[in-house]
Length: 133
Length: 133
Length: 133
Length: 133
Image 1 (cartoon, each protein chain N blue to C red):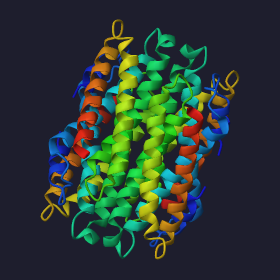
Image 2 (image 1 turned 45 degrees about the vertical axis):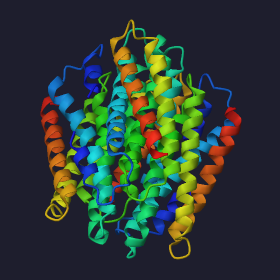
Image 3 (image 1 turned 135 degrees about the vertical axis):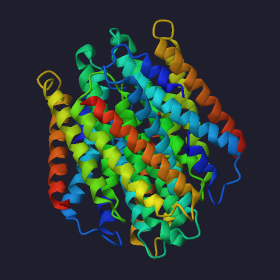
Image 4 (image 1 turned 120 degrees about the vertical axis):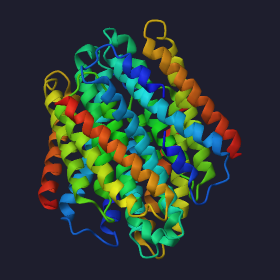
């Protein structure tokens, strides 16, 4: 993706580990889109009645990831406490969504894949948290 | 606003204090729009060079409030840890943005008003947190 | 809502009819939150299988309204063609969502109310379009 | 990105050209994040006074791309007129943002790269429009 080049061209980088930052942004984008698509695929399943909680938590996780990806992508004059709290919220959303998707992984492949993306995004959030101090 | 009637018509309310819930959603909507408008007004000021941090934190706060308003407005099968973490992130965003806007309150009325909205939204978030347990 | 005061305090207003502008922003906020809440209430209904298209179109309409509310709230150096295209998209989303919600108005009060909010938001969008020329 | 696998696992695909759909979603994600990062990099430049319109149009384009990426990623029971209007709005946002970024391409590399991403996203939107009919 090209956004990484733009993040790297920032005139006043914050000093936060660049690799951890880029991984977190990319995983937030991928997880946000994956959760939007998994909520929609779950809504299209014939057993939608069983998928209610997946649909709800995927919607939450998409909202958390999209907002976090935006906030983490900004390097100008950040507030670190705001940033940490947001990354923690994203990590919590990914965990809740991964756990619920996993319960449906055996019969819905899109849930199995979505759980994986959520776990990877949680890990990228947790790793970035250790770099922000 | 009409959205409140729809929140009240939910077939399976979660048992969370309804008043605190509605105040949090409404304040998130108002604060999100206020921060978008204050970032934009600050961008239009002749002393924009002095407003860089206001613009950045208003953008963050708008993203946090909009995502939190959506998540809090959902009552079906919630994950309370996700919800708490998100409300905490919103509270942190409102605090950071209010503090920065306040520094410009004397010379930019829109910053003075925006700081007030952020403080009110933070309070609504903090109150809702005490009700979710 | 307080955001209106901030919109009115913009240092370089665009000359677009202020009343039509404020109505459009407020209706986008209300409609966005209403559609998020109606999608969620529909997801919580025992006849969720019948509500699939409501849930999908409410999600679309919430995304369109939230993005349009943000774009319309900005008055600094706008691109009018971008703004018109976005307001037209919001109007189309409100129309599609209102029509679908109306089909469920008789048995789900939240859909009846949501259809009304969508129609009002569509009208505010259409009125603003006539003022941007 | 993994979201593509989830889009391909949808139980009831809409029949819209899958390749054009996936390109549009991916370019919306990349362009949304690129515009958020370019607005932020521009805000951090010492000549921020000259960058006001870039910052504004990048913010608009990020909002349009993020909303469009979500709507296009949903395949369950779509409304094609809504979808077309949204993709047209995204195309208009990308065009306006690309033109403005290009004016700063010679002295700010992030604007040069962002203009390219916007043009690619506009093309993906326009191509998808020809497939939805």
